[in-house]
Length: 77
Picture 1 (cartoon, rainbow, N blue to C red):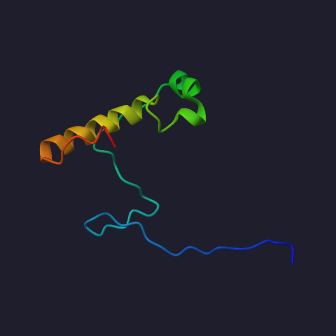
Picture 2: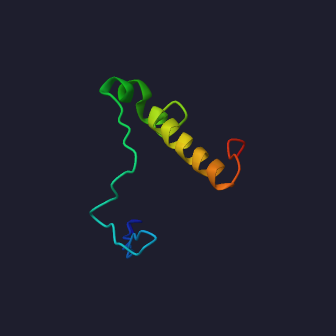
């Protein structure tokens, strides 16, 4: 036995209304892009962190939606 293996995943990614997004993805409600320089400066480890401007924009949108919905402020989480 050489330790090799195989995994077969069978699943669908559906939106809350049941639309299959496989191979299509989702069109963003808010677009925020990074320049080549920003990507280079961030590096792989910086993506998806508070150093990432796209992350901060998304975080602000989520926090605003929470506050408007009465869900409170999640910054302390």
